[in-house]
Amino acid sequence: MFGTSKRTRIVDTFNGIIKYEPLGTLRMPARFLHALHKACDSAGVDRIRWHDLRHYYASVMLKVYPNEIWRVSNYLGHEQVSTTTDIYGHWIEDETDNDKEVDKVSSAFG
Image (cartoon, rainbow, N blue to C red; front, side):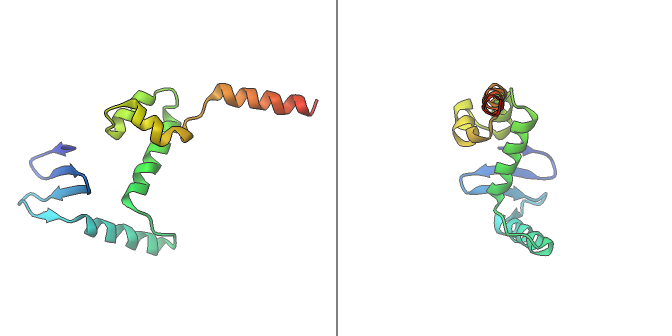
C-alpha cells in the first residue's frame, strides 16, 4: 500500500494505482488516464501514459541525486537498487566518464 489516510486509500496493484474515496467508492485508473489525455490534448502535445510520468520522475530524481542511486531506488519503491540501475541506468551520468571524454576530444583538436 502506498499510503493511507482517513480520507482516501491508495493501493498499488499490478495493473496500476487504484484510489478509494472516503465512502469507499472506487476511482478507476481509466478516469485518470482520460483526464491526462484531455490535458495533453488541451496543451497540444502527444498523449502520454501514466508510466511515462514515472519514467520522467525517475529521470529527474537521477539528475537531482546523481550519486545517491539508493535514494532514487527507494523513492521509486524498488526493493533492490539493481532494479533501478537496470531500468534507468542509461540516465545515470558518470562525471568521471564525461571529464575523460572532454579531455579526449580536446586533445584531438590540440
